[in-house]
Image (cartoon, rainbow over all chains, first blue to last red; front, top):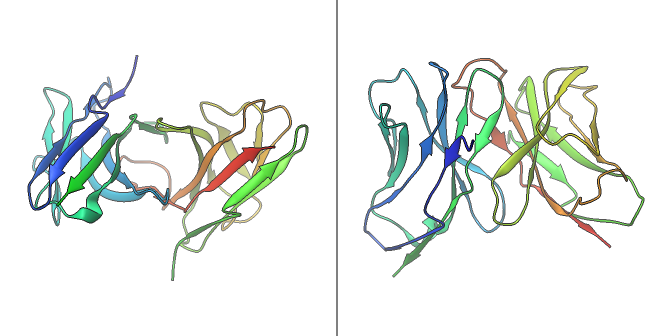
Length: 113
Length: 115
């Protein structure tokens, strides 16, 4: 069974608008971590934000916030005030009790003027 | 500047040839990882190492080998047994394994093409 699901292959957003990228996960562990990475066309994976399963507050990092709904097993990324440089692939990932990061298939975000 | 370097950026492999991808980090991280990314896909774990002279297979280790003789270095060899090696290879490191919050930081990647 797929552990990380990103159902949006592609998303469009106008510059300066907010956008939400969806991520749902599946785990039986009580302790786990959720990550979002950005991959521009250059290929490098850039860490954006982290949410621990026991964290009560949603994580925020600048224009990025993680909408964590534990009961629904969702960890959506919200990007506020989109910029042209935000155009990239975005990957959701989960780390369980093992050392492995499990990645979703990604969402391609395109920001237009 | 601290970071992770991968070389070369592009690598071409002939049939039956072994090739080695380099990964070096100066972040003083204990754990290092190798991932493979195919077009339109997420990353899949090949091998990982939590400490020098020790490493474990990931989900797709067949046809690959690694070594971890130094803390800073974790080279990946793509052997002739890997029948479909064309992919983008990413190396990552983290402070140390254990715990959910240990963020993995990635290098710029190596693109491997088969001639």
